[in-house]
Length: 351
Ligand SMILES: Nc1ncnc2c1ncn2[C@@H]1O[C@H](COP(=O)(O)OP(=O)(O)OP(=O)(O)O)[C@@H](O)[C@H]1O
Ligand SMILES: [Mg+2]
Image 1 (cartoon, rainbow, N blue to C red):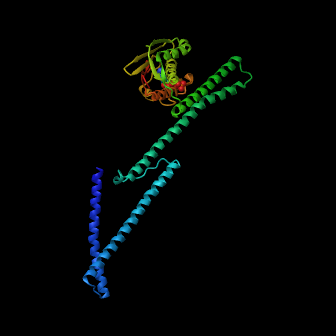
Image 2: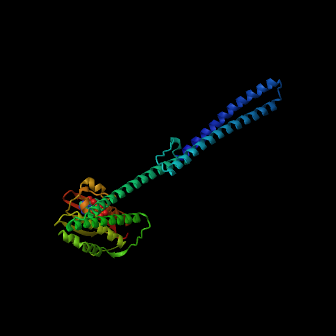
Image 3: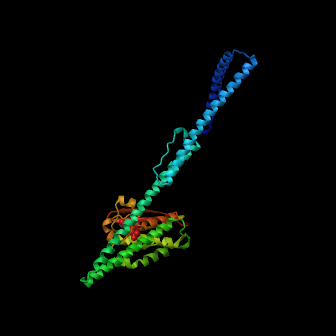
């Protein structure tokens, strides 16, 4: 395709060269004839032809110089446009989109223009995400702070009963805990995304790890009288133990949090040739199809009305997803509102 275009261009240049020479020869012949008759001298045939050839050459050189200067000006305009676009991008204007003529599609200049256009689109998207992130963080921090501020003011009232005072202090403590959890989760997520987070895979017993996480959450599920059904088999695999601990902790605490009193949680594990699958099912509040599409997004909380009571930051599943990505694993959710939620995690046995 590229060769065909090149041959076509070469043929066009040769044709223009030939036609231009014929025209120049014609003009040169007439100019020299006119000069001879004006001077009243008619040189010898050889000199007449020699002068015509020189005139053709001069004409050709002049037109080549004009074409070259015009081309140079056009090229300078191109570079000015590019430099201007890069300058605007550097100042934060990501709406820049340079015109790409169809004949420039494949040449180097066209590639440079598409590169600049793509860069502007991607930087614009990053900027949009950054602003959304900042607004989410401010929003998340704002509500516990307002609450702490309000109850601290209420505590100044000297006529407050001991019970109320205690209750307000408990709320302040809970909201401070929530703030600290948001900050912890944000730090963790940022660190995981920075590429500098330590990733130390090693061989360990996955079944043991899952059992330990369930045990450490025992006070939470016992308090709600949840029936914990665990079916695990002896299995060792290679992964970062600390990071995977966080995955199981986040998923199981979600299941406990979103399952009502006397509910049921089931934890099973199966292994295939080179992968292991862990399934966590609960018969809790469940999720609609629309909610399922968003739960791995940062700060997403499906049921806003329960947020205050659950005190989550909506970052737990984003952290889970990030850690599983680092292990080349995957997570899917299947749920029905008010019936059940199932998370299926698949991991390679050797990350
Ligand atoms: N097992 C579940 N059953 C029902 N809904 C769930 C379940 N797990 C997660 N969700 C929904 O997904 C949302 C996002 O979960 P995620 O773990 O990211 O945040 P969170 O639990 O609200 O806060 P955090 O984990 O940061 O404390 C939750 O707010 C909840 O609405
Ligand atoms: Mg959570």
